[in-house]
Image (cartoon, rainbow, N blue to C red; front, side, top):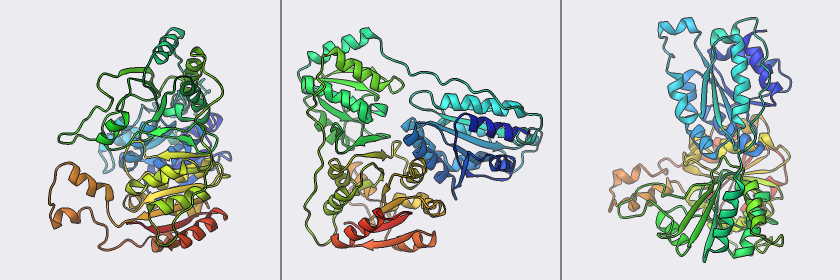
Length: 515
């Protein structure tokens, strides 16, 4: 058995079932080893950002790692933007990055690079193997560390001679550490502070946004009439009918300050106190109300559900909840599509247990608002703000749960970063509906240009934010990659195309033009 075979067998023994790959010459032994593993699915992405984003979506929806297979430092670098998002989402994920054989590094061949230096900023743990057998050992370590609560990015660097070297052995599995918990004393102190607070709120993130954890947040809210708020860009939010309703912190700093105004106590579980996404002239960076008591009770690496349950119990909170979301069917104005009626149609039709990948940008506010009362679903957002996540995350989510419909709400500008994901959707016949929200511009940047104080921008500046010359033909792009596609400009067209896509299997793209 060579090192590559020992590694892949170790990964399979540890429950890794999917490899998202864009390999090169240095990974051919690893490719051959995957071929021998009947329990490991191999999925090709035509760009490394698709590979890493898909692994992110898979990890968010399964709480266990997929493995990526990437080609040397440059291949890894191509995938770093979505690894940034995955790290912010605290996703369990394992990267396998091939490297030159150890003796070949001295020649400084064209693709030689500092892979550790490339990997470290977007990884929680990086390890280079020392021998063929140690390659499998590194894999076993990565399996365990990647699943340390709530999740970590692990990168294993595999020199070519370690992959092809013989007499390697499969590594034993390492027990995954149990999540850390809050002490009874800290729970008691937090309970007393909440019970005595005048205008309290729970501010939640990470695993605190799952249905069972939200149930206990709802108990606390029922006891003391607290607001329940989530971070602006949560990794995975369970919402819709039957789930405790939650408020989402606005994106823009001044809106967030106004949103939090008046709160006298905020308890943070699974998230730190919020800050503005960027610095602006004469706008706040710190968003919490001045004078409010801020209690950072549980960081994201603390068991969120356990914290909320014990906190609710300590407060003698009821099991009868007041903030359970009910389903609502919206009446919308028929005719030309706009953000509101398109969102209402989507909310009305969203199927039970759907997964939504949201990279909708400036068009998405209405979709998030109206789908709050849709059927139960998971909502995945661009956690790290690095655009090009939406389509790949939808790929990973669909691979993770093939029986669930995935809906990708995708802005046109950010969609172009990783449009190769459409090809993978078609190749794997993934059950995804892509809704392209087309406004022919980088809409958010037109807003930000004014917010940073640029007045009366000229033609040259505005041209850098414009996508209308030439206009991008999403139908042609989709069909060229094997995905059926439609364009809708009216409510009837959109409703009909969306119903058809939701009632059939396989990928479909619907382009909607929004002002």
